Each structure stands twice: as C-alpha cells, then as structure tokens.
Image (cartoon, rainbow, N blue to C red; front, side, top):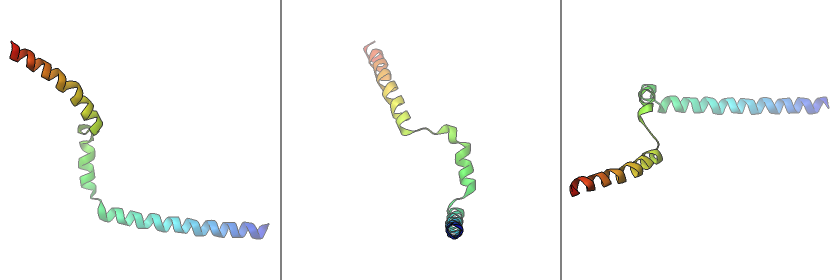
Amino acid sequence: MLDLLRKTIKKLQKDFKEVIEVTNSQSELLLGKVDFSEIDKIWDNFDKFCIFDDLKDLYLKTVPEISKFETKIIDF
C-alpha cells in the first residue's frame, strides 16, 4: 500500500512538472506574440465594439423603418 502511494506521488510530481513546463513555454510564446500596449488600447475602447449579430439585428430593425420614412418623404 505504501509503495503504491509512493508511485502515485511520483507520478503526480512528474505530471505537475510537465504542466509547469507547458505553462512556462506558453507564457514565453505569449510574451513574444502579444504587445500589451496594443491590448490596453483595445481594452480601453472595448465598449465601442459589438458582436456582428447585434449589428446585423440593429441593421434589420432600422433600415426598413428608414426606408419607409424615405418613401413617405418622396411621396410627399
């Protein structure tokens, strides 16, 4: 039983080291790829962006109404 626990602990330690290595390598890749000043600019303007589907819904709601109004003005 004690031997099984030791093997399990060694395996957990090995797995944990692998996780740390992968995490470190990913962190290094991100540091090389991401310019944090650019991320800050995006984040500062985040409230100015929307999801395309939201924009499409807005378009579909407004354009027909504007078109109706335009038709009324032309008829007048």
